[in-house]
Amino acid sequence: MKKLLLGLALSAVCAAPAFAALKAGDMAPDFTAQGSLGGKPFTFNLKDALKKGPVVVYFYPSAYTGGCDLEAHTFAEESDKFAAAKSTIIGVSADDLGRLTKFSADPSFCAGKFPIASDADTKIAQSYKLNVTQRAGAKDVNKDDINHAFIERVTFVVGQDGKILATLSSKDDGLTPDQHVDKSLAIVTASK
Image (cartoon, rainbow, N blue to C red; front, side):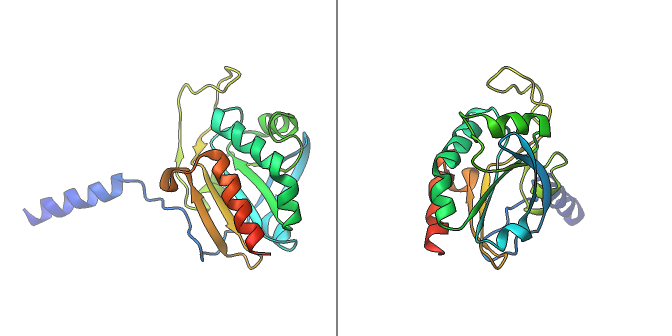
């Protein structure tokens, strides 16, 4: 009986998602990713960006979806305030470079104000301990098929020392996409 109960307990643990996003005080995994800034190719490296100040690394499910569109638009509107706080914004999703190139230049969304990067194999998201899900049959606001995994919406504010200052989560904290922007701006402004 003990073996049966132990076996059931282990199978329940193994079936549950093992991911819990990195928290404040954890070292942020360094990464380099290809992306786009204003519709042009862009290479982002976290270590290099941290030399200039704090970095807001925000993960989002997909370009051209309601919440992600709002979040990108709000980051674009507030980009001058982030720059004044000597901070860098980088959006990361599993979108391919073609979708990101259009999204980054679109005046309704990123508007060329900050870079976005592709994590097509979701290795960056996994290094930050984020949940990744497949959404078979998902479509974007343009009715185009979404053929990539969705990364959970989590924003990490990373201090110049490479340690995470804050983890902001839609799932855990109940934050709306635009609240990710407001809260991360408050944190980088206070860290000056």
